[in-house]
Image 1 (cartoon, rainbow, N blue to C red):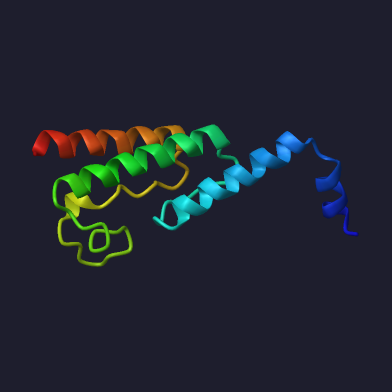
Image 2: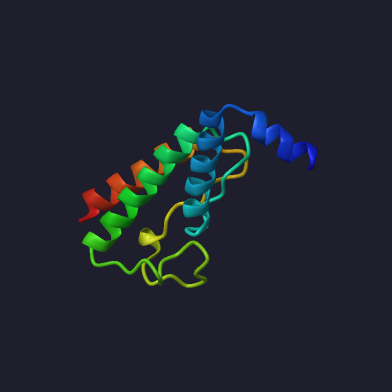
Length: 110
């Protein structure tokens, strides 16, 4: 058995659960092309995911298409419907704030 596997087995079960939950949230963000960092706190990533989902709900409510307005789309149908990109070195907390601000801008523009 590898040292990493032994270390994982001796860790507190709640810590393992937290790691799995963090990985799940990070995967959900990755499918939306949102960068995550190893030092992102799990709670912060959950708040980022909630903010991203709120942004997506607002885009859909305004008639936007999430598929044609992705971060990876070269020529989005409506640039204001593209989720803000997380900046290099930007904390999860700061990114969450920017996503929520972008959501508010969409609401005001409607």
